[in-house]
Length: 422
Image (cartoon, rainbow, N blue to C red; front, side, top):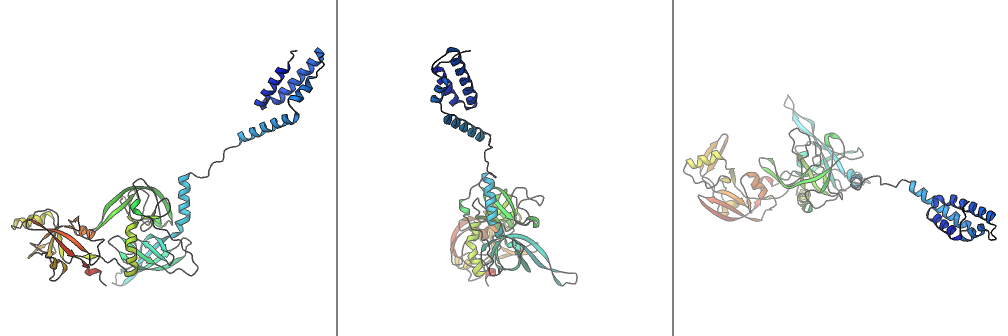
């Protein structure tokens, strides 16, 4: 049997500290070897006592306990978060503000076979609660021509609402219901649409196809999109997003990662009628600008130039040229008529003097051709409306126009648009 020196014994003991897994076996082996040495060599110094002096039983127990704890820690699975960071953000925003999104349904008046007016179900859409008194922001097309408006909350309660103000120019409306006393409404805060960027993550909450408070997530795909709403209206500076927007989402909020409204979901581009990832929202800064007027006046008071205009089109240009009239541009607004004493008349603008008929429309040719208003090029009535969209009665704008082949500029003080007056 091999004998061990004191130096070798201490080396084994140090190794035992470094490898707790063989500690017990090593100590047993050393003690057994020491006993054999003592018995065979007749040494007068018991090795067992030397071992006890180098490594006490309490130290051995401590090493064993430390090793056992280390083994226990290594087999425990690491604690993982329940959701990824972006998932948790979506969940947080939805849970905090989905109760501030309402479902809007309408009734409209139809005419039956007996030429009697009868109510029937109209459209549906979404809206955002913007004030605890029951004010709701939505699209004007959601409530246009509505005979009755119903607003349903997250808990299923339903209230009859009324229109406070409509601005078809921006496809926005404010409606209101009267919440019972003690009902604590969730108000969704406004953000700032001037700071948003393409690629920014956004969330849309609405009621597509009657499915209440649905959340969809996407990014901002584009900014500053001009969208033709109808022949007289272009929605300017629209936000484009790939967050799914479907019928029933109209009027609902487009939210940033903080849960602030940065847009009002309005329409989709879709050849099939369903979402294909191209949706549009009105910037919230537009809404913030006009909401006070909608609540105070029920409308947006805009400035106007008192004149009747016709948009130039190829057949009209050719006809005027064939009648020896100078037409220096292909796009612009031909002034058909101006009332005496109007702001256009006072500014020196001239209407036409030769009546012509184009299908069912009668207008005059020979007048000035307007090509720009307030620094914006105009080639259609929709362009003119857009150029004056943020101007108020009393403001002065610059009008650029051609008279013959010469171009002029004139200052026009705007008045309130006649059809908007109460």
